[in-house]
Amino acid sequence: MQVAKREERYERILAEATHLFAVKGYEQTTVSDIVKACEMARGTFYLYFENLEQVLSAVFSRVMNLLWEQVEQILGKGEPLGPGAMKNIVRAIFHLLAQQKELLSVFRCGGGQVFNKFKYETIRDHLGVGVANLIRESQQHDGGFRPCTPELVSMMITTLIDQMAYYTFALEQDGYPQEIVMQELVNFIEYGICGTPYDMMEDTTEK
Image (cartoon, rainbow, N blue to C red; front, top):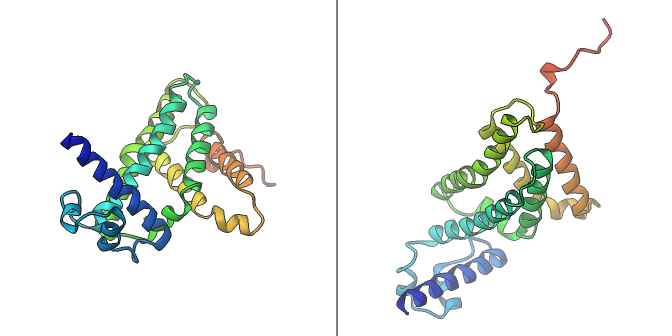
């Protein structure tokens, strides 16, 4: 019973903090705001988190876990490794992140050096590793990916998706629908991992 109650309080803190971060922004949100929204004593909050930055890290981890679940679902379908699976992963990640635009802004502007280090390591060790493994396995089975460094390319891919999802709202204001942005992103990444690098292309310029 105590374990269930503790888990319930933890989830309540994360839920209220997520809402406040999205509505007010990280810098404008205080521990007092979260405590008030949760209707709990300030001391109770500190049983779960030492400070606001720890809450932000937990919220970020929650979003990354949702993204990883999306990747696992795609890979669990037994789809052949290669561009097809990568396209589906890019679309899934983009759609989920695009739905979290307010939080993406918080993740960029909120927190200090500790959070930024945590954010990088979390992306690298979870989402980055999954995409890198997909690239590596595809290369081993001649799945259509060009020779590259999987870990480095996976970080480039996940960072690019994150950036484009963040700017989706502004792009929509400029007349670019979300689906168009996503398709161009998918094409860009596909050409990048399947296309021929410039240094390997035949020189077609006139001599």
